[in-house]
Length: 378
Ligand SMILES: Cc1ncc(COP(=O)(O)O)c(C=O)c1O
Image (tube, rainbow, N blue to C red; front, side, top):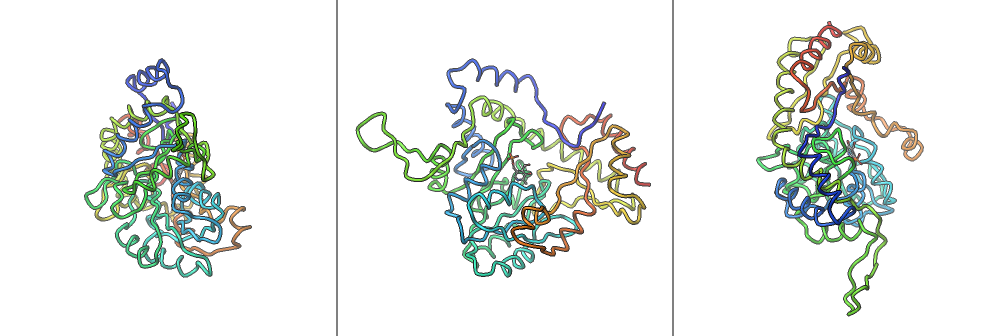
């Protein structure tokens, strides 16, 4: 049986919840949307949660609500999924790529400062720290620097639901203006497709709720059918079917995180003597959301390429993945911004490999992965 690098865990409760939604009066947005938003706001301790069609549209809505547009600059660490940078381009603003720590892949305050220095004549509007693999960025220092530079913080927390930073749940909105989540199946909580933004700003939440459905608002005239559209919105709505699955999954978040953290700790113990492997590091003052278990590998010392290692593990039925190719090296971004040298990102990218981590990874499969990884890297 093939062991993938990540996968959803769906049980009978999840299936029953979806069946109930299918039998209800609502297929698209109905009462379950609000119920999901309330549950997510409670879990993250943010006062507001806005749910939408996926993590990418959630990022777009967050930037739109902050009025990001042409002429603005938004700082994005280059080691992330394409969506973080692409959401900036949808608004017409420019992406200024930040370098990352070569060992953790996270943007530090120093890398943020480096990117601020490269904003040129553009107005720096937002910085988007990415909690890569579930490991939390130094949000206190990033938010202090953001305030000094009059810019907003939108945390890409798509990997970090269930993590803790400075004794608060990720998404609480203490150090960031908004936090964005994805409920794609490989993430900690699956909705098929789904995304959300949490925030303490009611005005921003209301703007995003309006923009996710064409910019429509109930008109204050007496006509009961009337609505007004003052701003151009989108159809970024989510369905009751997806929210029913999401609600059921959210109720198991603690269990999912505990199993992920337990597996990560056991991997650490089993790999700590392997001289070719650098273990993932949990950031200070935090608990990781453990979306990924990504190790750093010294391929030169090992005398094998990453493709060799991936192929050998695949031949033993083990899936691996690389998170991520630095976004600034993608042809589209190279065409936009030319060649940019970000050495920390290149070093991180050249060494990283994600191996299987998900709650339903059985102890037997865990043992198979450990033995195979130690054998291939010996
Ligand atoms: C860091 C990060 N940001 C944003 C996204 C976009 O989320 P979605 O796939 O739900 O659009 C992803 C999804 O893979 C991601 O990993």
